[in-house]
Length: 99
Image (cartoon, rainbow, N blue to C red):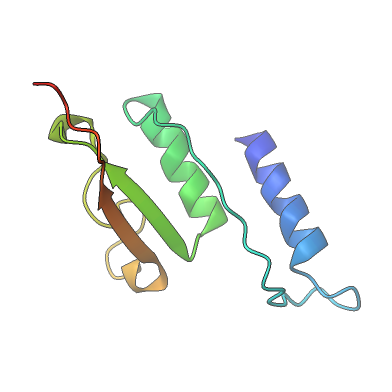
């Protein structure tokens, strides 16, 4: 997590801050993060911590046919009422489980 947070901080500093001030500016340069698919146990905790720290504006969640292997519905990493701050796109995987 320390390395992920440092990379995100570097991106914000280099690409999202005006050189004259510490005020964030919209550069139009998106940051795309492909997270690991490990969503159980500590993998889930790492994902939640990452999402809370980075505070993305858009999240694409790919769901598979095995419901037990999917993440919880909605913006699960946010507190109730905070979910208006993110656009969540849920996509069903084209690949179906053989069972």
